[in-house]
Image (cartoon, rainbow, N blue to C red; front, side, top):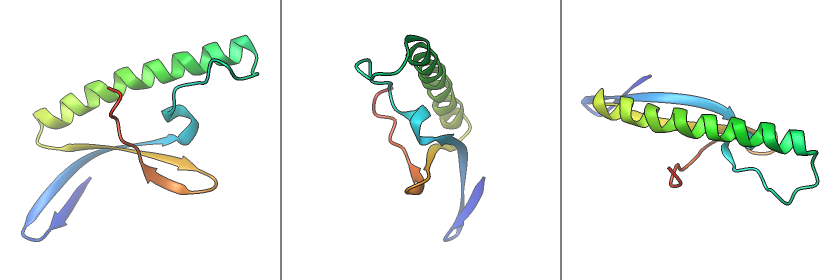
Length: 83
């Protein structure tokens, strides 16, 4: 996505995710073991993808944005401090 900011055009690489896929699963939750395992795999897969997306964006003069959606709050930007 390209956005004009003043006289410059800024490029963004954007990913939209469900909010629950952007948080590390709670190992103490009362969910079934198979559900917790699945959520852990999804989260780890996403972390790897986000890491390489940030590298790709940096190499190509872009900024990577992760937007998470929840029914309550709509879309919000997610900080990737844990990578």
